[in-house]
Image 1: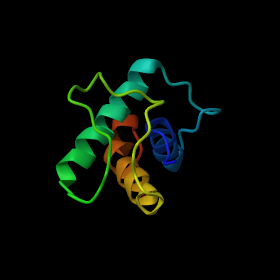
Image 2: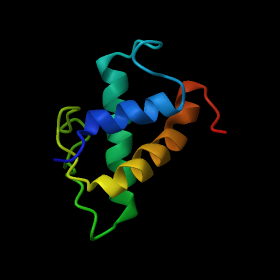
Image 3: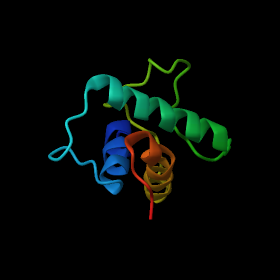
Image 4: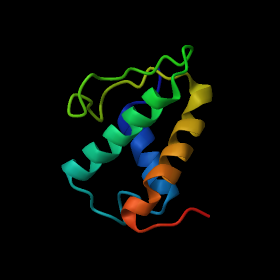
Length: 93
């Protein structure tokens, strides 16, 4: 079974120093990051990347299975972290 979308989002947030125990995010903030991840992966247009995307930004859920193979997880959460860092006042090193 692949990682959930929530696991990928939380790992990306952790990469920029916003782990669950240090930063209280509300549901809308999580949904924004999740929508950003959906957009990012859809923009890559990899035919062989079996990401489970949604038609609407609000249709994705943190508990949804990502469909990603294990080898793709690090690429996704690292790229997502870089993409969202400035939204949270962070600068990637």
